[in-house]
Length: 229
Image 1 (cartoon, rainbow, N blue to C red):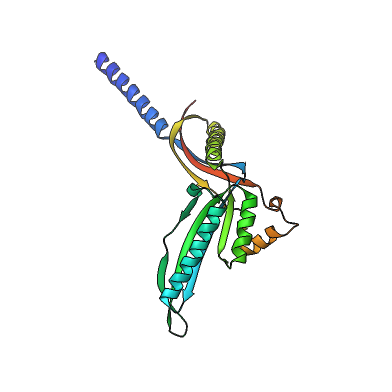
Image 2 (image 1 turned 90 degrees about the horizontal axis):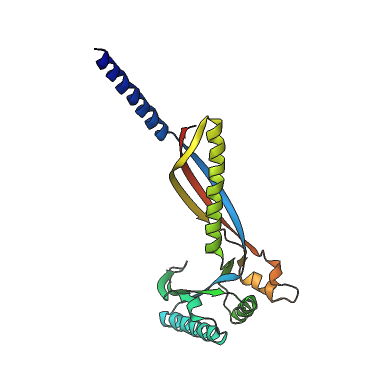
C-alpha cells in the first residue's frame, strides 16, 4: 500500500513538473523594434514618359515613334549602359474628349539608372529643350541592400534588449526566439521633375542642394519564449 502511494505521489510530482514546464514554454513576449541606417545617395532612378494625344491614330503613333527615336539616339550618344535602361511597350488607346470626340493617346515609360549627376543635369536640359515635359526621378543608393542587412541586425538586437528588460521585470528569463517577422521601408527622397531640372540647369544650383543621405529602415516583430529564472 505504501509503495502504491509513493508511486502515485512520484507520478503526480512529475506530472505537475511537466505541466509547469509546458506552461513556461507557452509563455511568450512580443516586442516591436526598428532601426535606421543612412547611406549616401549615389544613384538616381529616372523615368521618362512619352505621351501623345491626336485626333488621328496614325499621327499619334508616328509622333510617338519620332519622340521614341530621338530619345533612343540621345541615350546612345550619352553612352548610358544598356543594362541600366528598361522600358514598357507603347500603349495605344482611345481617349474620349469632353466634346464627345474620340482621339488616340499613346504612352510609354522609359526607366534609367544613373550614377553620373552631371549626366543627369545634361539629360534633363536636353529633354526640356525638345519638349519632353513628363519625367521624374528619385535618389537612391547602390548600398541599399547592404544597409538593409545592417538595419535588420540592429533591429533584432534592439528587440532582444527590450525583451530582456521586460522579461526581467516580470520575473522571467528570456528564452529562444519563437517567431520573427520583418518589413522594410524605403522612403522616396527628393523628386526631380521639369521644374527642378531648370533649377539644376542654373549656374547657382548644384547637387549639394539635394539631400545626400538615404535612410534605410527595417522593422521587426519578435516573439520570444519566457522561461523560469
